Length: 564
Image (cartoon, rainbow, N blue to C red; front, side, top):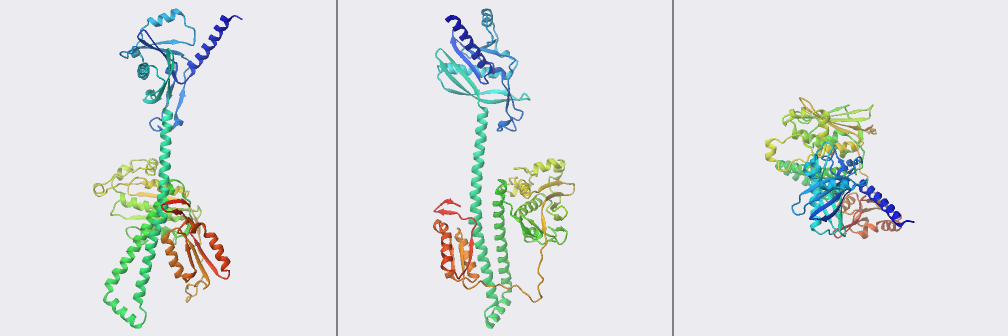
């Protein structure tokens, strides 16, 4: 019942509680006061104890998982910082506040003269100077409660010093004020990570929009041009054939006189056809590569004849061309199940790199093989050494493969001629995308630099198929069977060019205009398509229907896309 004893006991409890908080807090706390023209600050032990070791600081600045703290509780010393606010000079003392302090110990501390510059730790001396400057700023602002931003220093395990971002919050306690300094470097790193994530998401959305435009508008435009080219070829053939005997004779005479002009005309048509198809393949491959990068591409396996796919890339060469020979084992090569577009991309980049970095005077050999026992397809592209080949031979095979198939990497140096004529260089992502294409097919790409050659290899699992063709009689020929007269053609497509093409195809198939229904120009026609088809089937129960629908219909109103 003694009030004085109870008060002393409670004060002791408060002292122990505050000592525990003071000693164990990871934030640096400074209790500041002003007396006799001097600033006095009690700095918590965390100023000495917390050591952040980040051995991957330089390589993984944004990876929060590599940060870990170590607390050394063996020393609970509190630093007393005495600062002259006029010139910024300061002195430091150490005291253990976790234990009661005698008057004699306090007098010894007051009369001691320990300067901060005598610290054996340069990083600690820098942090002390930063803290002293911060306390002076807080005093000059009369202890206004606000947040100050500072940079302090830490060491890695290799004793490499680096800066960390800190915030200091000020709390006014009437005659004194409390400054809490907190490490916010992880917050900054998290912010940088989130910023990079938002950037990647934005880039992915832009790529998705570009792919949508490429797959629909550009592809449809090129297909329309190819369709018009086919019509031009048909018209040219009909003119050459003529309609009657007199026309045939006149056409023969004209052909004889203008044989050279006709040959040049056909050659131009063939070149235009090849150019359009090359552009179509290029834009479709580019759209596919963006999906492969983001791991959104769905493999579409088809039964393909590999020699024909590879020869189509080298459209102006044959399989036994002197510059680009093609070797295969076994012969004839079996039909295998694979995604032709992924194979095209890998092979096209391999040949392109061989032409760019190999000897331009030597041949580039392509070798394909199929192992029936392993169910594995193998492809090799071999070229003669080019400039800088000796330097690449000095790198180990594992290191070469890691470097070549990494993003934004280019091991070869440009020649003087290439520097002179090239405006924009390679981004260095081609081999990386090739490897991702191979991984999509559950395969792998490798490269090896030998003394006499550069060997690019690709292998992946594949299933072979045996094509069984029915025996045909010698006089049996394929004929086109017309559609029944009561057939309706119903088409839905969101592209105006595709709708025109489909109308033309249905006309060629023999469907009259009154039985051709082609919709998809707006949201009303797209959303009402099912009801329209059901009504048409009920009204024309005796008729047959050919329905062709685009698998991706985009609802567009004006310049805005509302859905797919």
